[in-house]
Image (cartoon, rainbow, N blue to C red; front, side, top):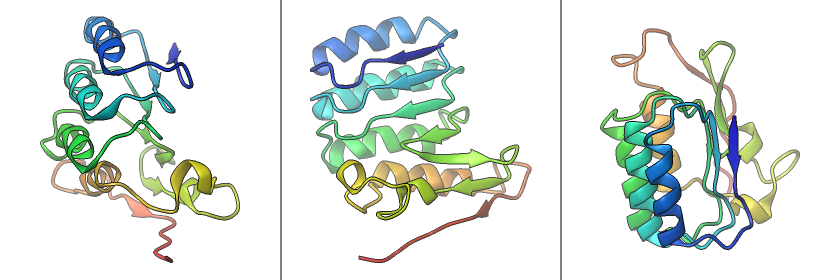
Length: 151
């Protein structure tokens, strides 16, 4: 099951209600909240839901109005190892049985969409990448397939 509420004008208060339900429902495997004015307050509710929900594998929060503060709140769930189940975060994904970290969909050309990504990886996305590369936490070695650092 995927909960897709992208482009719905959902704000921080509304996402808090959604996340309250999500924290008690492990049947949702995909959470798509992109293109909503969630702001930093919404990031807190989302982080709480990610910490308590162990079923979400596919998670997207693109164009949600997060500042660096909101990105840090989301990043904490990855850095503090509070969530290890997400495999696809804002089109940064684990593939090949979890042994490859693919960020090629984030590239400005080709399949990537510069309107969605702006060619930048946010703090929360960098934290996700860093966490998933940690061999002390994950038994398999993860290879980075594509990394574009052009500006």
